[in-house]
Length: 358
Ligand SMILES: O=C(O)CCC(=O)C(=O)O
Ligand SMILES: [Fe+2]
Image (cartoon, rainbow, N blue to C red; front, side, top):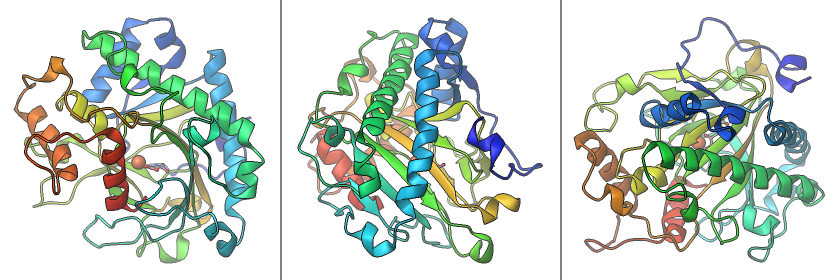
């Protein structure tokens, strides 16, 4: 039985939910046009959708691996802090390893620090694309599970990217060729843990609001807390208005489903035609607030030597709002760059990781 219906407190009723679409992995594999269209529509509106993984063998396996990683996360985060810190990631040097709470850049008005710890495990380290670092013992003991999960995560991302390319009238490999599994990249599996929040719920955020910076994120979570910014609270210039607070909508975890969103790289490749939505994690409400929250994520990122610029097909722009969105993303990376200078994906990811602290 899936975790969420067996041992975890249920998602509270009456919260404003994000009206995001559901797409079937099996239908995408079978080439169903309706599901493919929903992926494109989601990528242009909310930037998020549910992916129903049930009913396709690869999807079912991926799902079961995510649940096994939930158990692994529980085990790995249970170690004392000083042991976990022996495997800490080195900000600005490597994105991979253990990140303690309180190190992510604060972005909300009240500047609440993050209360989430991560273990980020590189696809390259698991698959011998580059030499590995040492990870905490529970991770090292489960390399085969992580190898399989990262293969499935990447394959899932490639299915989404092929679907988007074909719905946009591009060559089927227009995006997948920028995200190769066998090339060094920032792809990784992230395990996250946020402790029970009940006592200090007003003083911390699980994760401050952010956009992901790669191509595709495939997320599994089991408790509430994830919120996305409502498209109606974003001005036509593509950025959140500074004159009012954003409206945040809850994403309720659904058994059997992953939550998929696009990152900033896809905004850049498509000149703003596709969207990377802002999201954050707040303390879960109701009885869920007293539980430990874990999530399991696969981040697909362009491989390191990909130039971070719009594909030729999008050179001539795609409307004002799209151009503004692309410019907003470019602004996050532009410090110290010459006019027209293009970063490689490796440098792009490094800059963003330094800025955000993860
Ligand atoms: O834990 C979650 O639900 C979201 C995590 C997330 O947004 C991230 O790790 O970038
Ligand atoms: Fe995220």
